[in-house]
Image (cartoon, rainbow, N blue to C red; front, side, top):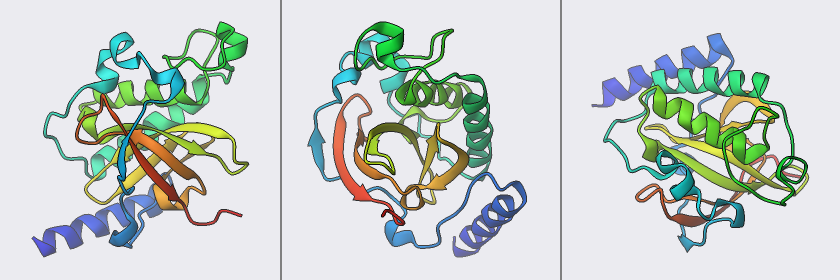
Length: 196
């Protein structure tokens, strides 16, 4: 099994170097966001599972490897390029509403939900795609999509086209969908490197 992992790591590193779209963190001790305990869903996400059932679908047993990371980079870049940023307040008249982007656009969680749907459509197991709440580099509330691969957790963010390991995003992770039951949420409080 070790030679297979070495080959996989070499392939991922080569893809990262040639595509520049995602990066691999070599430290397995910090590769995955630490799940702490059950937590309530964010206010805007209450009712998300009923409104968009696939957003909380269980897994299908498929692992996520190098080909999934490459597809995630494509989906992240495409969504960031075509979805216009617009706040929930401007669009719906409410502070928070988690949904798919409309014709007008969407805010950070709308981008994340859209990317989750696109990757599920590409065959990625839903339990490998976890919506997460964070604090951005200015300590403002922000939502991203976490892709849980065999190598660790990678982040698709509407503020950057590169798909990075969670610990290189400069974000503070607060909670995310439970990897074991995506209809529930867990506390993950974890700070990525590079925060000032």
